[in-house]
Image (cartoon, rainbow, N blue to C red):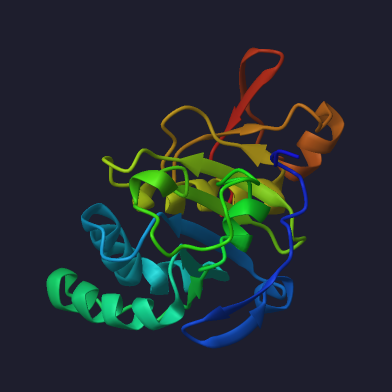
Length: 219
């Protein structure tokens, strides 16, 4: 069964570079980012893991944990982490899931059920679909899924921006318009009545259309 936004993120127990985790227990009351890789020692993923290591504290400041996954054993991850730090200048301190039996990749619909049960002998091209970023909320629901081709490095600044947007929605019942950046104007959710909006935004709003109510970003 395919996964969709607002589905519960499938739970699993797996070995990581930080030991054995139960995914839902590891998330706890935090937000979480799970981002996957088709194989260790691949060039684009090396740059991504390093950049994410540089952003980890920014995610932590937003109560968001970071965890990676690669379709290889944890023992390979440790050697790869040394290459990442050497070439990218950031140490990978977040956990990396080992998925040598392809269980998590299948659970998250990144590989088909008939893909086999071992990463051994598989090439990165065979695992090309294991390139998805998931943002998961404290309620363990999937909030975002974003998949990239192997040849295109992912934009983790965009993932940070999306997290800011979703956390604003969760706290203030607003949505963010096209190309929004933190500090920009936001939109009152359609589910919020004008009466409720007056209580939440007593200084009023601009409404070029009744369904388009624009206010400064709440602090």
